[in-house]
Length: 346
Image 1 (cartoon, rainbow, N blue to C red):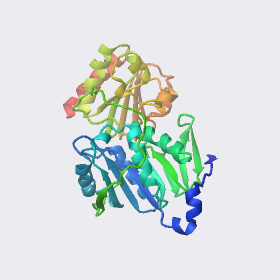
Image 2 (image 1 turned 90 degrees about the horizontal axis):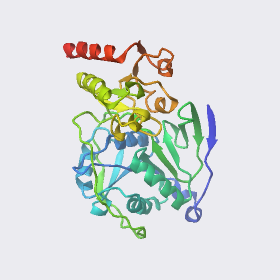
Image 3 (image 1 turned 45 degrees about the vertical axis):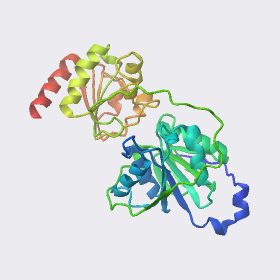
Image 4 (image 1 turned 120 degrees about the vertical axis):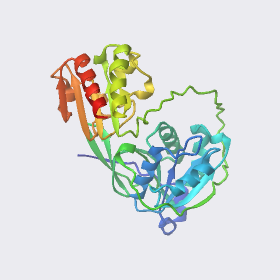
């Protein structure tokens, strides 16, 4: 176990206020939601992590649907620790541009009461956190997987091959959490009050404009929160084989589909399905890898799965070292037979 320490940086404002005014520690969590007001699963995990810090928790929601999302958050059984919900119900925040959201978050964090700021380790969180760190002159603590106490955290390093225990003495801890490491716990609904977020006093001068989006729509479970995942790798050779083996097996299990970076780069599937160090991190109850060798970068994104099944014709493939069950043989023979038997059971 490695140990690392954050650089301590105390703002001039905090020095003037003194320690007596900082005794009421609170945690602020940035909560993401969809256009129809649904709370992102990764943000619920961030709330779960925030509740472990032992402080009163406040949430910040932004965007035109944030009012509806706040009501949804109140009803959610995983938000019992919430005591306050701030809403910035403006269209300017709809697409979570970091240039827009960061000044809004900074306005709340000016209050010395907030000693912790927590975001999910999503694309949005990864955009906001470094900007806040630069503006506040604090070092962010990224991708934590465990909270030891309010100042001590555990995070993976070297593509997950080692864990660093980080003790932070900063006045404000800026934290991103790995969603798969903080499951949402059921509990009572929140009684938190909903209020408007404070107006932004300093707007970013960077001009950004939303041009459009091209979304991949699917009836399958979301990859980041699915309980079952079927993933394909370079060993599938081409897109036709990927579609003919991975898709039917996933359908028979009601599973999400994932892929290695090599499979994505080869055009087997969309890059939104990439699992690994530079893709999504998943921890399903069941992970089935087809034609995946087990490169360290891919293992970093799935090795926390509860049960790992590997199917590969190379008996020396590294993935067998982390797999709970392994099948060695021709994918074109094993997978269709496995799919047929699962379909019969279903």
